[in-house]
Length: 290
Length: 290
Image (cartoon, rainbow over all chains, first blue to last red; front, side, top):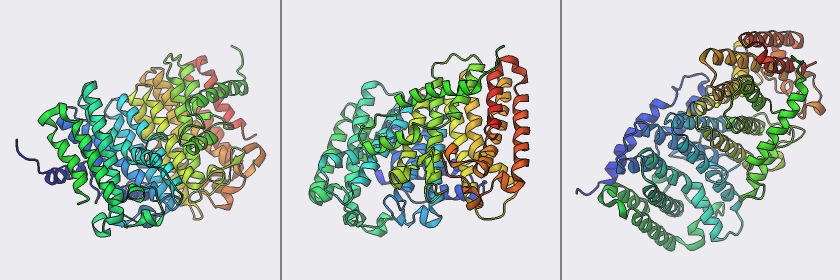
């Protein structure tokens, strides 16, 4: 088997996903134009497309054939974009920079930012409905609801500037970031008609990788450079946010992320070489911080 | 046929819907409790439940039997509640009073308000997924997206304090309020397996009634009393909002609403006496302003 060039894989998939997103998002002059321009501003351009790539990679590894996979994958990116827009608002994280440009409420205004987030969420469910799979729609809705992604953001906001314990931290990570990455793996698996044991293994893969992803994100917030991240560094410390490195330091955080990635890859053992790309993706999560 | 006591019908249905909403919303001490308390604060208590009642009434008139109707009806109310929360935010309409109590961002804070809206939207799609009907999920997602409810709110916000034309006004009404009321009628019809001609007629009914509903709402904002409305009166004039009475005056607005309600009832002609409750509902929309 050829070794996998994960960076090439990521770059190739990003091109395909970006083209699909461009086609899915209403044209910028669609009335009312401000909201459609705002949606395109937030979604298109920079962005790793990690969540749709996880869904695609799992789908490919499971040899899925459902042609709706791209709609479902793009829906996950729209949801991710909507969550970033709302998280960046002044009443939340109050961030000015995202993906290398001003955050949406800075470039437009707060009202448009709230509404663009709402619009992207609605469009995501319209795309998911195109899969014809209510079970998948239910999974995604649960994953981003008050006991999923939104719940994680609530605890994240509330943890700012006060002492926190590692249980809260794990809740924030596994919900705020982990839930959407996990459901990305599940959506890819479900659309590929994975069996129940396969689904369980891929869920474990998504969970562990999602947690590691967020830990590395927090490490990069401390150690990274504004230029490569496209957002301001050091903001978590300023806000005294509940993060892994704040509680355990950078070195132990990296070790913890490595441990989680090893577990994520263990979950792939039953799949043998067909899961090579999924292992490469998991490795990439750690590589980001090197 | 007995004459219909619409107020009794509305009161009865509100009790049933409120009980269902109470069971659907997570308990207030569910972790993280602030978001679940905020969701319950905004949804439970006052509120006419007009959208779920439209869905139920159409479903009943079409003799539907799908037991998922209550989930779908409640999803529409959760979406309505989420849109009110976001519309009331300081960066939008900046309202302090809603349904007779402080708006959510006043009672809690802005971050919780944004997130509670997001959470209610996600929960609504989880409920809709329970119907097992991707066609219905798609309808609702489109109705509340950037070319539906959210689009209407965008134009509404942008129309504040500047001259506007009647086309803009109709766009605001038919999208901001009309889209959700129309889709409520459609969801009731689709779950009752209405035929395509029936669906077209009921869509027309929803559209006309939805427009009339918003015109009357605007009239009440001028002429109504804070005590009966549960929100502050005169706020549209203060903000120089694009409203029907602002453009045409109260008397002509009431005439226009009556004309629309007559058209809504005409659309029900093919249904004969089985649509009596739908006619009574339409009449009630006008009665509110007397």
